[in-house]
Amino acid sequence: MKKLFKYLGGLLLVVVLIASAFFVHVWYFKPYDINLFFGKTALQFALNSPETLSSVRVLEGFGIDGHNAELDDASMAAGDEAFAFALEAHETLLSYEDEDLNATDKMSKDVMLSLLDIVVDGERFRFHNYPVNQLFGVQNGFPSFMESTHQVEDQGDAEDYVSRLSKVGIKFDQVLEGLKHRENLGILPPQFVVTKVLEEMNGFVNTPAEDNILFTALAQKMETAELPQATQNEIAVKAKSTIEQTVYPAYQNLIDYFVKLDVKVSDNHGVWSLPDGDAFYALALKFFTTTDYSPDYIHNYGLEEVDRIQAEILSILAAEGWDVSGGFTQSIENMAVNPRFYYPDNDEGRDQILDDYKTMLVDIEREMSSHFHDFPEAKVDVQRIPEFKEKTSPGAYYQRPAMDGSRPGVFYANLYDIKATPKYGMKTLAYHEGTPGHHYQLAIQQELEDMPFFRKMVPFTAYTEGWALYAERVAYEMGMLPDPYDNIGRLQAELFRAVRLVVDTGIHAKRWSRERAIDYMLANTGMAESDVVSEIERYFVMPGQATAYKVGMTKILELRAKAEQQLGDQYDIRDFHSAVLNNGSVPLNILEQLVDQYIEATKAGKAQS
Image (tube, rainbow, N blue to C red; front, side, top):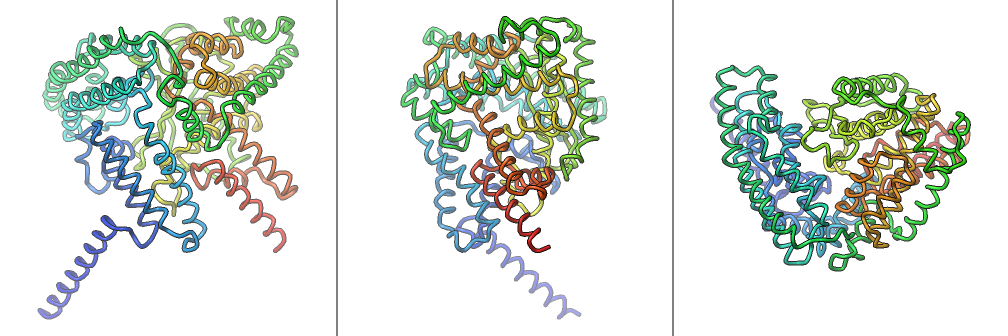
């Protein structure tokens, strides 16, 4: 028996040594299998981002949670390391020969290359952005992250929350380092960005600590977790003190910087005004659309689509008895001011909006089987955008669910301006952000089996946003918009994305002013002015992103028409949707390959039968 134990012990030691050697080789050298390389690359990236780890919640299931007390390193040195890592990964990925890979691995290689190619090409534009802006800067991103992502299930999680509060000063100092470097390079934000972030940050620090979202969110999380009251009180005292002594001073340092910056900027220019700005914008369009479309092509296509969609809206209004002789702008404004289309401008009205969004999503889920084979396990919730940042936030956005199922997907609705939520646009927005839009697509992507982890997480904007816009149309085809006014809401949403093609390229390639872009969008969408201003200012700080929606939807519709034409009676829209969705987010050229494979496989199936 002793010999047996000795033998088993020796065998175990050999296994451990082999496993250790294997791990060291995979971690520090080129893995022999490309899937090991995919896993290693995704893991190394994630391990350098504790905030990402908290968001996906993969390691918690293994009892690893130290990252939940940390914040991402925003220093320039960390940025240098991230670029060096990406360049090394790019070189290693190219060393895997295509002929040695099966079709699935070859596609995964192409997907990762499409990301890393942009990183390599864009290294010289690393600082062509505005890390503190009215939409997604660190000043509002940090409170949002703590409120929506940091989970509290026990005392340790609550203490980690306070630990993160204590490290805000370090992170904000790192951000300031990058801001000053950009200033030296001549990369300054538009003037309105300075004005709005100052207004936002001053409001933030002038809020008593016990009323700040960082404090109230923690209190709510501890109460929900049912921590002992004495523990809650003790941690609340620490949190309040940390907010007052660390968080607020960190914000004040940013405020002081932007006060000085305010006198140095006076213009609202697109990125054409930055060093080598035209080349930067061309790369931004390539990144977001995954195409080589020029600014002129996108601009002109947008103008054509604006005319087409407006004509369709006017025909519906005329059929409903509206006088459309004054043209689109007047006709849509006449409809938009009718009080029948709005909720009461009070708390009760806003609560009803959220309840109605939830009902709309429940209703469409019951009908999904007519157009889809699959349904994800992850659920979706509807919540209001936190009030501290809703004034400068978009009309809505979506947050994907946690990988471990501990947090549902969330459709966040902006309820700041009640006039920005007409009843006839609500269904389309719910379908875009929820099901069959972002939640449906992203939840399916996360739950894919036998897929490299990075492909469960990677977001290609033209695909994800193109799908969500396409989903609005599918919902209409499913019969979920029987009211003509709801259909106008759908067409307005598509029109909005066509107008985006015009104004984004107008701002960054044709040198439109902020005011010209606002005037164009107001005249051609019928949107509330508050929404229009917020959107136009979004395009200034996210060049190219707004073009991805319509470009992606157009490609999906082109591929659907191709499948219908080539397959005839064999065509089933549910099969088409599975072909589009069941490989996750991909560049549009790879999406076309996937649809071609589906078409050929369907034809071959008929031939074999």
